[in-house]
Image 1 (cartoon, rainbow, N blue to C red):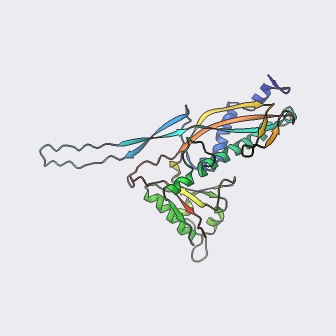
Image 2 (cartoon, helix red, strand yellow; image 1 turned 180 degrees about the vertical axis):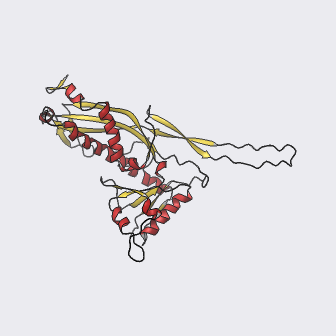
Image 3 (cartoon, rainbow, N blue to C red; image 1 turned 45 degrees about the horizontal axis):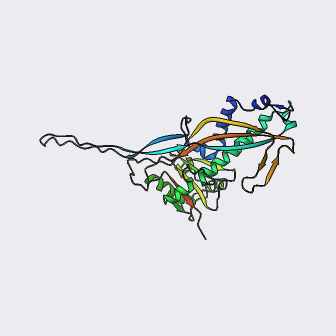
Length: 304
């Protein structure tokens, strides 16, 4: 089949198994939250059940002085959480004359734009909860707030980071990473001791840090989130689907404004869909079995 004189097979070459894997890996690298989180094996269906420990076993000493020296019985309790795969769609308009120009590597131009768009949408939904699917959990910042795991910004940034780490540690987790906006870089560079020298070779200095540079971090709301990023898990549904559009109009989803009229502008558009899900298991542990435990904490901006 041809699309405005362009053979469908010409467009099919843009997406094959190898290219699909490039999209998977590229999104994981580009998305700051996914690059920090823990990836599970690819999903084989739309929903994956997680068996989360909800109650720890208890060991007992056996009293041999009693008549029978019986062993006590203990149990472990489990509860279910789910990872629900939801679809993210990206549409890339392409001029027909570019597609027909054999000297231009179209995929080299299309691929980074696809990856950037998908990664930004994932970061925004996972961190802020913006436009998230209803089956996904609340955004990470909202969950931190609900768990009352925020520390209000004070006069000493180093102390603020320490206080936030303490909240995570009291929940029974080890802090292994920090997530924030690009403005956070300067704050860590300005961590100075009493002599004005950079604070180095400390536990805080050694933490892995990831800075969002795609516009999804609102520094006016939160300075950073830190915690055990092994507890932020995600899985990808292994199917990238695509469709070539030629007669459609493309509208801005926020304003409904027509951005492209493909037929009038001699364009085709490649629509790619990508499916994934995420969750925070937050199982009980030896240090904290309460419902208030949470593996992340944040530093909230002080309200003047």
